[in-house]
Image 1 (cartoon, rainbow, N blue to C red):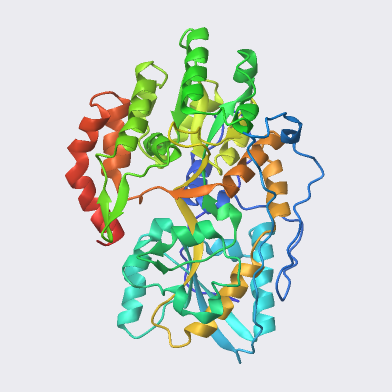
Image 2: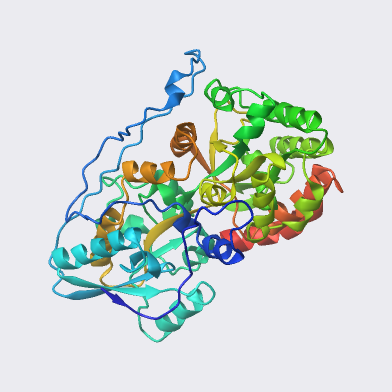
Length: 494
């Protein structure tokens, strides 16, 4: 296994160090890679040369969720998660070299911790079993497209196999990646590739990425301060979820109660960047983009969309959002201050992602829990709202693409962390078993992928005007409609 190049996007594991003492360096490192935040810890690397068996998810601690009495007709079902079946076809590649392009080469450096050692051993086992060489090619997050196309123009293939994520989806719609439906060795029929990953990498009916790792799919969720909830006797939030009582109305009611009883010292919610406030629309099963005659259209006049955004503005009108803090923290990169505010007990809720618990465990003295976004008035179930997922892909113009598909499948299979390992890692930073159950619920829920990261006219400009109440939701969407459509056209390749 070789390393080509020297560009790294740094990742790191936050250490538990008490409130507000987490260094800005560590904050920057983990922000760079959402995927690394959720990487589980395993005791030792033991990759298997062939298909991993399906293993039952068994944990020593039984979920306390089971103790909650829920009427059968409304009960939420948390289905046990199983490891997927991925079939490898061992083949002698006769020393063939496969270049593996990744934005996270440190994930495969055996000197970078237990997880990386596990993955490095997995790649070495593939090299041994398939008689091949895997060259790791670090991708530069700023120049990757130019680098790939420069090599292509010179008649070279920079990498046959890619590990990427939605943040770099221009690899899909600019024609760099192959439609995996045309590559038989990927086997989209028999291999149990993660449906959420496939959905996130589907473009104009083509499938450009696959994966099986639960931890690489970013899921929006809401964290709550358990100490505040207990102090004000706000009820059992987990029971509300299981009873399908965790709704927009209940969320507002609880937020108002804690704000009023604390004399305005505890806000209802903060957000991990301003765009998180748009996730209430997805929780109501509506997206601002719809497909009309094969073209992505900014659907700014949608009544269900306006209804959800009116709810967000109504929430703000009660004074439940710290407007000064909201104005200062526009993006995920600026969101550290909101996380610190939540960890200091200045709000009951924090809108975030499944990886945010890594930060909270490092910063927060109070206990916290994880919940799905509440159900909107137009739905009767919780939605798995995602803004990105990681996946494996193949370079399109490769005469040996079938062999590359064989090796890509082996990489995906052998670097995969089993569900039990993932749960053990979660248990090290989650403060209760119920939070893990809530994350399992989201893993089993219907996926809704938010619009692309470049459609900022909606999830920054419009939502900012809605939350700060400078415009009504209708006015805010009308004001950005034309510019947002331009961004939608660019992102979806209309």
